Image (cartoon, rainbow, N blue to C red; front, side, top):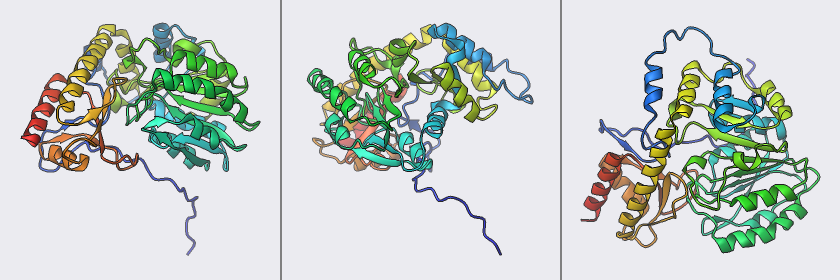
Length: 398
């Protein structure tokens, strides 16, 4: 009897944080960097009026692309929508990478970069980070003639670290080294800014200089997943900086501040040539009708976004100060999460994680997948969830 033969893929599948707990009817989930305030009331109203779901959605997401174009003042023909920005990352890897190409990824970074690169057969090379901050020098050491992509998330997830002014100065000095080490085979530089999971980020001047000094035929991909949360004066989103650049591709998502994680909708912005090539790879009907309508309404509700950002800043500061009293240190605020360091705490992160689970509260363990020991990632939750979390922490220590 003949066996069905398929290509073996040496990639570990993505394992999301827990969403449910046995014997717990109600769970407080502070593990997935989801919106603290849910989604816009405009979205809820729109979804209540959706009728039949028996028809296929618009495969080109024309209405959504039109609203994105209006909201961000960008060209309609240069927008592509996907089932979350993850799908667009996957398409970019399919389009630009082949077997034996090398992709440089910081050791602590968004897991989907390495997963999708590995699926197409590219070799993943990990750069070592110093104190959870990206080491530019280590990245440069590992650039070879086969390097096609450098993944750099900034600010980073799950560590939520970011580069100081001095470190940014050092990074600036190293940019000529980046250019010097780029080979003729280099096609893409991937840059998530801010980054998931470490929380690091690059300033606008650094991004502009990097693009200026890269060869014109190298595509710079900037992932803006957490851009709406960033209010630092030295930061600008990739879309604001590179909207009119033909050799820059921007990634955006509706899963974070817009609160539409379960609907899976994201979008990308690039040159007409790149969009045309990606549309060949893009599956038909990849963004469902409900997701398209919800995304359109979420873009219209600017008050909800303002309220979400304000809420995030207020409670990130409160949680940071509160946890510091128990010897649990965390990063400066750069996105909608904190990376909790238990090095100076009397309890280990694993013990703390299990104790919270017993109380029906889930944080993100960074040991599995990210391989970060004795730390946890805490998503900024709603007012109610944050207060319940704080009461639970007091109970663990008292």
